[in-house]
Structures are given as C-alpha cells and as structure tokens.
Image (cartoon, rainbow, N blue to C red; front, side, top):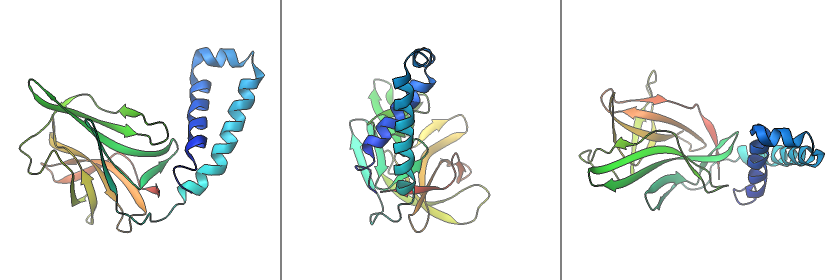
Amino acid sequence: MTITSSRWAGRIWLSVQAAIWDSKTRRRMGRRPTRIFAALLGALVFTMVAPATAQASHCGLVETLNNQGGYHWPSHPYAGTGYGPLARYSEVIGTSFGRVGRVGFYSPLTGDFVPESGWMTVDDNSGGFPGWNRYNSIAIGESHAYPTTAYATFHTPYGPARWVTQYSDSYDYIRWGVHNLLTNRVYLSHGWMPVVC
C-alpha cells in the first residue's frame, strides 16, 4: 500500500474528524443524517486502508530529504500514525535579526505543515547545521545509538537542541524526539511507529 493509494482515504478521514469535532458542524449533523452517514463511510474506508498502510515494511530507501521554501522534512518512509503518514519538519527563515525557526509535522495527504513549537533562534555555529545531517544518537535511558536525521540546531532554555527523526536499525520503524546537545541524549516525544512507504 502506498501513500498515493491511501491519499483519498486519508483526506476523507481528516475531513470526517474535522466535521465531528467542530462544535458548530456537530450541531448541524444532528439535523443532517447524510453527514453522519458520510462520517461512518469515511471511517470505514480509512479503517480498511490504514492497517495495510501501517504494516508496510522497509521502503527500499533510507529516506528522501525534502526542501520546499523554508520547510525541510525527511520522507520515504513516513511514520504511520493514527492521523495518517506524518513527518517531522523544521522551518527556517531569515530575518533582520538572524535566522529563526520552528518545528512541527507535515502530512503528505493534505500537504499541510502544522507547527508544534514557537519560533526559536537558529544556532548558525553548530557545525553543518542548518542543513541536512545524518548521525547516530542515543535516547535517554538507552545505550544503543540509532540512525538519526536532523536539519537545524535551535537555542532553547535547556541548551542547544535538534528536533530529530530516529530510525530503527532496519529502517522499519520511526520515532521522534529532541536531541539536547548539552546532555548528548535524545528525549523522546513519541515511541516507535511503523514506516509508511
């Protein structure tokens, strides 16, 4: 199952979620049974497609590094989540005070970038950053170093940090976290998720 083949199912699912959870739309649904039917149908289609997508194995590539304007995100594979395939992105822009950036999630189904953080100052003196870098990193409480991808180093109250994508050694699973350069450990925000090709 590919991202392309599940694109419509993902869009239906996202639109259904928006319809159900928006309070105004929810009140209207009470008077329009067809909306309820559409929501159930969309959920059924997504349920049929998503498990096959989530079971995708090694995609044949380590990853593709994408750059679109100020947005930068790794793909192929994406992480399979309950919201469809997602990637963590870094956005970096130049200002009169220097470069700033923020991080968030990118959905290939909708093409949307959803920020997770506020704007942070970019560390331009962190060798090779900003720019794509691959290296191995260790999560807090673990001893094994996993393949890691990051685009930028940001100044945070806890020291310089990178919002990273970690891969299992087989590249069949993905997880996200923040690599604190002072402790040299990754603080995980998500557990292992299956890849979506």
